[in-house]
Amino acid sequence: MITGTAEFLERYTNLRYDRSVLVLRRGVVAVAGLLFIIVATLIVASDSIFLNQRGLASLQVGSIAPQSIFSPVETEYVSEVLTNEARQVAADSVNPIFDPPDSSIARQRAQLARQILDYMDNVRRDAFADDQTKTQDIEAIRELALSEELIQRIITVDNDTWREIDDQIVSVLERVFREEIRESNIQSVIQVLPNQVNLQFSQEDTNVVVAVVSDLLRPNTSLNQEATQEARNVAMEAVPDVRRSFVRGQVVVSGGTQIEADDYEALQQLALLRLADNQFQEIAQAFLASVIVMVIAGLYILRFEPALIYRNPRFFDSSRFNFFDCAGGVAFRVEWSNLYLPDLGNGIVVCGDYESANRDYRRSGSGDACRCDGKWIIRNCLTGCRGRDYWRAFA
Image (cartoon, rainbow, N blue to C red; front, side):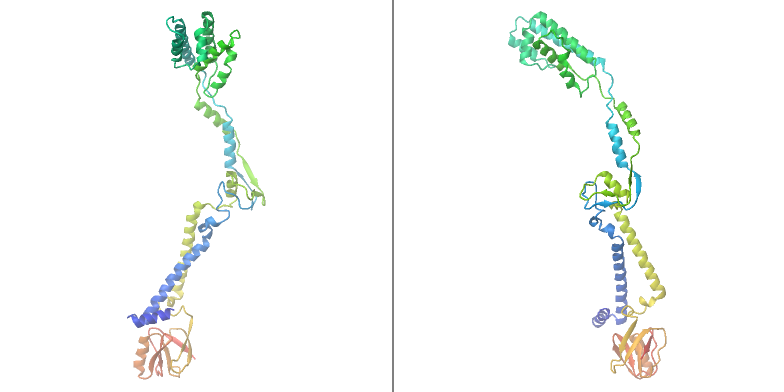
């Protein structure tokens, strides 16, 4: 192919045949070197380049194991995943720590209750207002959300009973605020309010006391973040490291099961996974190794076979070449040598290039030159051939 290309260039361009062959051969060397680097990189780094095609390397947390995975070695390690899970369980088991009940909140709510009860008493005593007006006045109290039935009971109850209800509301409110009321348990406190009311009251009056106190309740304590976190840290530090061990051949992950965080950690510890994060690094290492091998091979050729690139363009086709006498059909096997070539007795001399052939042809004064298989041959030459390229001929 190279010989035909060189002949084509010589025929249709001004490029000399030997020069064309030399350039084409060097191009082949460059392309071959590049292909070697690419192929070698693909072979060496195939596991990293085709990472998604591998069975184990593509597994992630949440993936389904395509088959059962067994431990290749016996090993024991500290499982960070299981240790962190155990420490988190210990931290979650610590109850939140709240500050002591704030007495100022109880005092403020008690004062507010007194103001509301005095207002209700004034509404009850208003002789110029009808029941509808009194109902509207009590409904206007923003801190309370009383039903119409309870409002009617407040308006219509006698004065002695109302004074007892008034005292009971204040008493129950103060008693409840002595305990810890959190945002999370305020509903449970409201549910037990009927038990705080004196048993001498009727159900209707008890409902009034419970309704008013319920609307006035507020949390009287807050979460102490620092104390809670300190207690959680102490609980976490008390948890020892969780160790995990495998024996050779033990099942790490069963086929068809989902990969959990601890399973993925075990696969990493057993060197059964290759992280995709190292993909670029491994490809670069394979590429660099291929380049180094190519450079070493090139230096070897330049040192021991320089003719491969600089002097003998036909070296790649074969280390030996068969030439035929164009006219007489006499065959010769040619191999590289730096020797003077005398006439072999049959008048046929093989020369490396056209200039050498012409020069010896002019010096001999006899014979004629022709081309055979891309080389110039002097037939009937009496003196031999000397030139830039030398060839030894064998019958």
